Image (tube, rainbow, N blue to C red):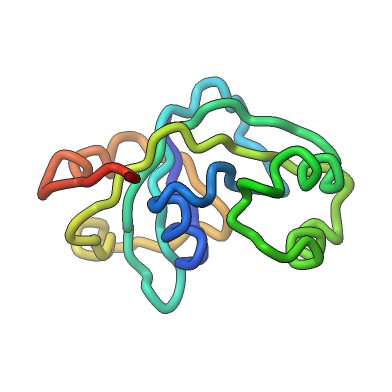
Length: 142
């Protein structure tokens, strides 16, 4: 099972560069052990699929514990910004980025999905994006 994840361009760039090793969410996948690949839809102003990453473990904890454990590899320099994101919840999820690949060129999903609407957070996908990582020349996160 794969997921399309809406993510701020700042953070998709950091995932692809290897600086951000965990993506944080307020909601978890229904069965995190079944998610193999996360396709990254960089939100406005980019509004394109920019790459993908394979999922490692998914940790559930309080925002304070997530920051203590993963703040140094979160791609977020400001703890108050991190805590602000989780201000309305008592628990959060850290999704480990195992391997990322940039998509060159990036793709506007509207070119092959007529009624495309970006997910608010994430949506499950059934192979409709798999061909993207096999075209062009994806590059690793080195």
